[in-house]
Image 1: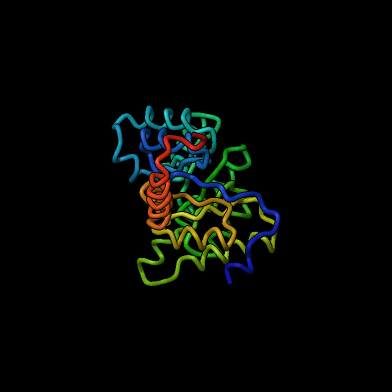
Image 2: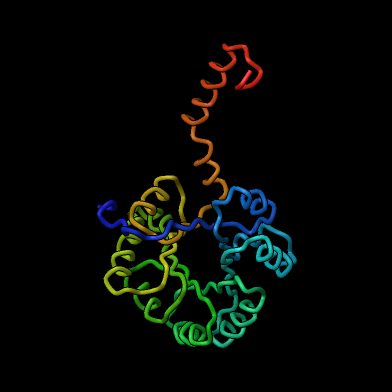
Length: 231
């Protein structure tokens, strides 16, 4: 089913790093595969207490979008903090949790040109509502559905179909990716972005068969007794 919904001629899927650790981000940027970063209060709680400094550093390190989440709760305060966050850097995307009381805030912010990532999306209808408001990213959570024994990847599939049916410009950002299978299915279905923890990305690079293949090639090369390829 996933293969049937791959978008023909679509741009390559973007990969965001799901972390607020500046050193990890710096280590991944040279690979050329990281297009952006997503942060949240839980990730920031593991880093330097000077949150503003951490976030500004990340925005300087990363050329692509950096999602920064509001922590205020009252709609008026969410609006004010979203404006404040948006001014940190040109590549900032303000992350706001889905809530009925925040919809007027999100609507106003998008009208004012603030890039919004609506997070904690768990249903097709939730996604439809925020897509109608013109948000830049919609973040459905895969892993948290799996936590209650529901296949979360189905939600990604539903959102991609919705996007194709109605021509929404909002991008589908697959979040809460817990394993390689989640990532692979998100790719096949046609999500626009996948945000991935660094530990999971390490697993992709350190595939045991790839490592075994390298060891085999090295061992066979040594049998030739040569120092370099063109001796």
